[in-house]
Image 1 (cartoon, one colour):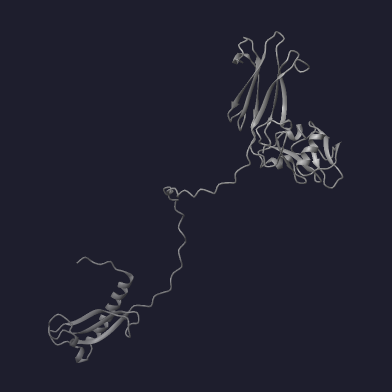
Image 2 (cartoon, helix red, strand yellow):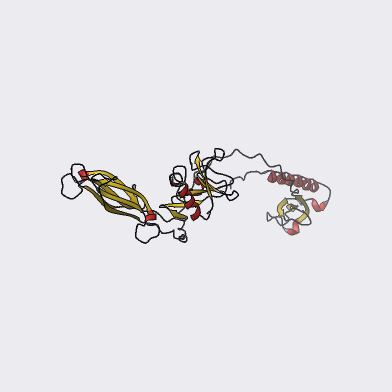
Length: 341
């Protein structure tokens, strides 16, 4: 049988057993006949584990000694003449924790998890206000101030009231295509323009020119000018001259007003601002619920607010200087702002 490794505890027990054996042998060499083996008899020692109890609180070894009276090579119970104990000592206090070891290298990232299930569709938003269609009329223009030899009069605008007819109040622009001085007729070709770069919401494409080959049709090579009349998206404010108008709060610019309404529309300046007219400014403010007296003026301190209602004054104002800008604001006034919708 191979030798077992010697632990500290086994060495302690072995040394204690040797000490107890020595005491037994010394006792056997004394004068007590009970401990003196008869001639030819052998003294024996038996070492056995002692469980925790009265003899050893934490357990240990029990060492029994005696003479092999029956010569069987074992120390039988009746042959035991002395017993001693080698007890395991009490468990010592825990030692101090050792210092933490150096931090190990980070492990590799785990594999990406599976994509989660798609979320439910959100509820539909509220429908926007309906858009307005572009309309135009083309009529013959007699010879006169607009066309020396006669021609065509084109009026265009947006159907603000949705009745399918271009009313006088809906006309945004008027143009003329005049016959040539060499007797050539002027021609106008109108086609639908799809939604795209020229018209975000679609509209009309207007091409004009002279009938050079006198065939009564405007060929591509005969087109002298092209313009577009575009449909509008739904207006969330009030419509005037095919533009969508909103009233600012005090100390609020038109840039801020139009930020959530498609963006700033320069009609703020060209219709109701310094490039527009007092009458248009007055009409827009009336539609916006700020009807009242109106005065033309300049206000370098206030800035380019253009058409503005002044509830704390006795009159509204049409400011012609400085020029109307998108970013101007007045702490005591409400601006008329044209936005995309």
